[in-house]
Length: 112
Image 1 (cartoon, rainbow, N blue to C red):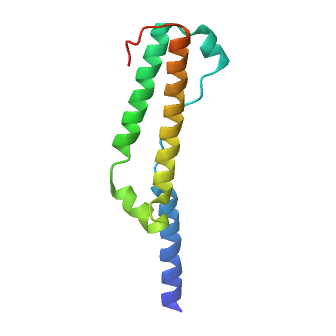
Image 2: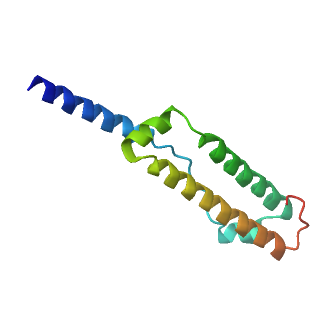
Image 3: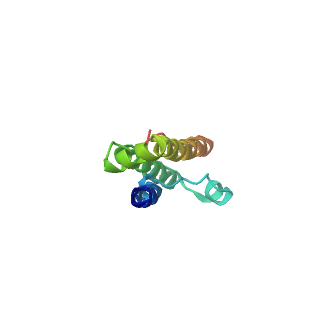
């Protein structure tokens, strides 16, 4: 009986730790109508740089760490991969929208 209680308590601790093991990165929002109407070419280039910084941050933070070990124990690391994919997808969508907006406003391509 004592071993069952210890095993159950260990399992609960592992579940609690796993809840904190999945990394979170945030998301980049889609370009709003207001942004499309009011952003200047310079502001578009600055926003592109910010989104690229977000992508670099996600890639750096997604490198293997101790939290990955806990995530692998909990869900084989699937949660971290899904989170990274969703974050990068949101960034890529915003980059595409910003490039389209830069083309629509006939800005020169100074920020690539």
